[in-house]
Image (tube, rainbow, N blue to C red; front, top):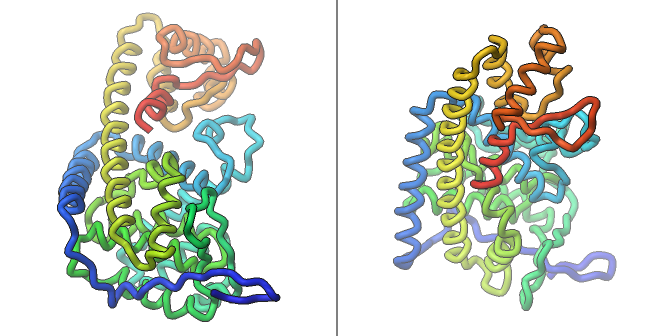
Length: 369
């Protein structure tokens, strides 16, 4: 327990991971690990063979960025990203910074040899921080967490006090870089838990945690692209997520097995869902392209407009005309045809400046994620 200005509060100093002794794990954990590796193997197989990976991957990455931002209390939806009339500039900025950071990390994961430098650069890109000294980025003040859902009967622990951050962060850096004697997914679970618990920076630690965990899968060649929608299960089960984290920080200090199981389950579900989304993307792309090609008297630019829906699934007729350098009447003919085919659906009932959404694409996210 810590004291400050006459007030008392709990802090939690996690055990050093480099000295951690785990196991033996029960049969359930073993079964979960087998299933998780299988699902990740299926996902990696899809990543290596799917034809429109860049197109599909961009959409999945955006959805992960939205969910990760929602986890930190940022108000943002997938629709906001493409709605030209949205006023949610803060939410869009948070998603764009997340995507830029993930791209930076993916491009530098094998180039930056010192983990601490990678972590600090990830933080700088994500937050726009201009501090050039890595050591100066570590927080110098106590931060307090307020879980969205308190765990009944357990003290609400806060991250380590500033005096303990440096040593905990240094040990984390070593652990992130070593080859452990236990399963790689167990190491990933502890990497997630530890950074989220230490909270080494003054802000945005939770999003940094999810980015670093995704990059860890790349570094260890579990996946070749950061397409695992890791935030999916955490966002859907925020009560359980907070309970599992706080359970290992509470009266059962350093009892990691429950969190490890929870994390592995989240990986299984995320891999299954991502695989399902990729399958659905392929299906609707084939079906809708075939229907457009079968239509007679459609302008030749129709298929190009359709392809553009995968980059921007919310459109206006005048926007289509401008982007395609075609007349408004030609653009309107294409939009009306795609609407009759059930590919586009009008948003709202306004007569002017009508907006249309690629319904089938959004239905994939609604059905699978």
